[in-house]
Length: 174
Image (cartoon, rainbow, N blue to C red; front, side, top):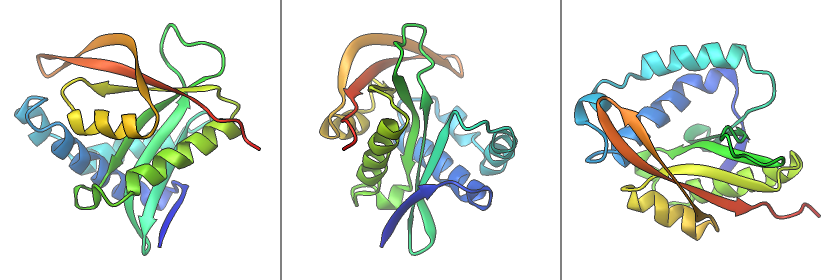
């Protein structure tokens, strides 16, 4: 049975593993391979532990687990964009283990994010997706997100990678 819950300190290594595997799968052929090869679960976990220790409640990390194993991770909080409106939240990251892509883990996390956004009184959720990441764009489209016309270039390892911002209104909690 799949469960979504807030991330806890013991989940950090598993979340870092999901993130690194997710990047290597999602961004293969999009980001420089040398950059993807250089990603380290251990280094990611060190940084994540520091952020976890400094957490002030403004961000929310959720994990999806199956039979006690973390299979997905989502991070969200206030929108960081300069043109953000009051009441805008942002999904900073959503990754699932490559072996569970297509099983509903991502959809479960996206639904949980919408509920959490409503609980935090966000009226709109935004996120950035790499233009060339067709799978993610289909996923977010099926979850009710749509491009809002805002584009950006992300500089990574000497490459300029185009990103598109997606948005969705947050349903009212009843």
